[in-house]
Image (cartoon, rainbow, N blue to C red; front, side, top):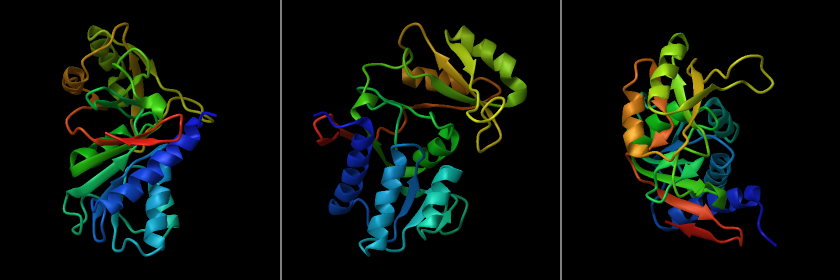
Length: 239
């Protein structure tokens, strides 16, 4: 019987944390950035368990969202920002999930609307690890999972026009159990973008981020991660 997506997420996250500890890539005293979402949270949980059992000590965590910060604080793990002196603007490792993983380890992230903080953390880390279920592996980007683009609210219309010139169809993301659009942890809005044909993720990351009024987009192409991806038969592959 095939392992469900939710079970795969837990398998991938648990295997990733335990393997990274065994390989010496997670060790006591590290500065670790931790992501947001349904796959990242099991990784946060497993890291907290390995701190609680004494395997890891003096871990300094930087959270990418309120969700992650609360989970860490509830487990007694101190949470810092990149600005704190003990962090010094740089992390040893970032661990997160992804919405799409391309063949060259290009990513789409931001399904949970935390893409800006996730990218700040990832791009200011010495290494980057992604945990995922098998459904996240794709052949190309642009036509399936919508690319999130975080924007300044006052620039919604001109940004939409500029994205349309790049071939995107844009939809303002609405809230769930909230009237009106999603507002990010940074006070911004999200445009979800799809294309009729697949796009070059690295090119689009650069082009979209040139648009005045765009805060950040959900393409992650500048720091190829190590990927732990679970399969339907219950195995976890490291790529």
